[in-house]
Image (cartoon, rainbow, N blue to C red; front, side, top):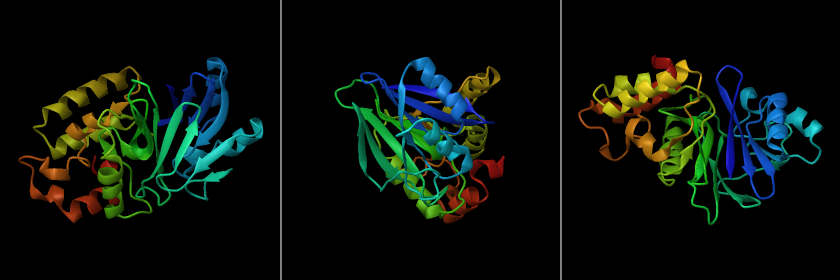
Length: 273
């Protein structure tokens, strides 16, 4: 399984996942059709499937055009508001595309119909991946990976439709229990701002400081910071570090309902930077 990271719009990512035996490809959050089809042509693959994490325009607006341009294209998602949807998904539903296995993980919070996609290949030494949309991070399985607007590198997505409790469970129970080697592919490049917030939460966390310096350097050179791994996220992502007393020397407010409702309702990390 090969993953192509495609930067589009102001700070979005869409992804092309290639099954290297069949040369068929899956697009995750197909936002800009022209750019996507340029990569499809360059890689000499056939686009057969779109996996959409949620209905927001910056993750799904290319679906209708691509269905017209690519007859037979299948569009998967969990929300009927997704344009050109052909296959509605349910939590823990599994799909298979050649050697690529996909487990669909419903992660309400940013939207009620937000779906992350955990991908891997059987009998493959590579790590899986998760595509998390607005996590601001994304995991996929190879070694596993994921993407969307649920989990981001160092942060998570805004609460727009769901509750703080739903987002907590999506992050810490649904995504947080995936294999630690899972590669995280998120839907936006918000790593620097996320880690600035993480440093305010844990000013003595050396891992956060190191990761932030690294992310700033990547940002200066216009290089994506994706993917991270789930195991790495547990060292610097404050929305994952609330579990099992992982914070040491941090004020008790980090565990409270007010922390989740305040930080997430005001726009996640963005509301506090």
